[in-house]
Amino acid sequence: MTSSLAKLDPKGLGRFAFLAYDQGLEHGPEDFRPNPPSASPRFILELARDFDYTAVVFQQGTALATRRLFPEVPRLIKLNGKANLYKGEPYSPLLCPVDYAVKELHAVAVGYTLYPGSEHEPLMFREFAQVVREAYGLGIPVVAWVYPRGKVVANDTAPEVVAYAARIAYELGADIAKVKWSGDRESFRWVCEAAGRTKVVLSGGTKSEDPQEFLAVLTQVMAAGGAGVAVGRNVWQRPPEEARTISKEIIHLVHTFGH
Ligand code: FBP
Image 1 (cartoon, rainbow, N blue to C red):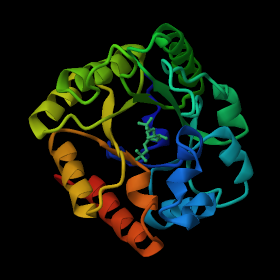
Image 2: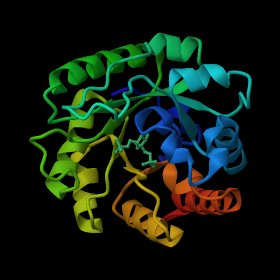
Image 3: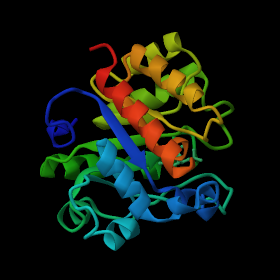
């Protein structure tokens, strides 16, 4: 595990709120339709700046295109990625080397999606283990998106599957694991325990019509020992004013829960 979380968390609060914006690659521009301004990374960067998100999550291309836009907003660079047109066993290849992300794209953290259970799991585990070693060498924290997926995974939100996902992140050396909601507070507590020293953050998921529903889940996550959230659609698929309101609530909740 890298000892570099201070890059993301200078005050040592152990709390994180990432604003995820790699869906243009992962899902396509369809995700921007509910709120057209979200097609522009400027909209995302303004939210991140105004509400003090820990970092925005960008793929290499978005990071390059916005190099000079709000450089004060920390960037977490997603090192691998895939589109969702191909529906076979998932493999998300490494697209951007760690040192390019750090030196050229000014990454304060790097991220990688693992699909345990996929036929291609060995390849992703090997790539990810290498990413951890390289990031460790540069003092950069690593966030693992861990999504058990593929034809052998019947239920990717079953507590034992989510706990296994969190443990995989720990075993492979991630600083932070981003996992799905396991359905209730008690099971999520087990997920957090399974992750050992690796911090656990909630993966946002599809937009809930009622923002309070999403905030209620996040409250349960924090009560279970979670360290925060990496959220995209639940924020930026809402019209600008609503995106700002929910951002304020998310950041307040993540930073103040239990304090
Ligand atoms: P959301 O909050 O929009 O769900 O974003 C989190 C995220 O992990 C993104 O980083 C990624 O693009 C997407 O979800 C992957 O979603 P899926 O589960 O459909 O592969």
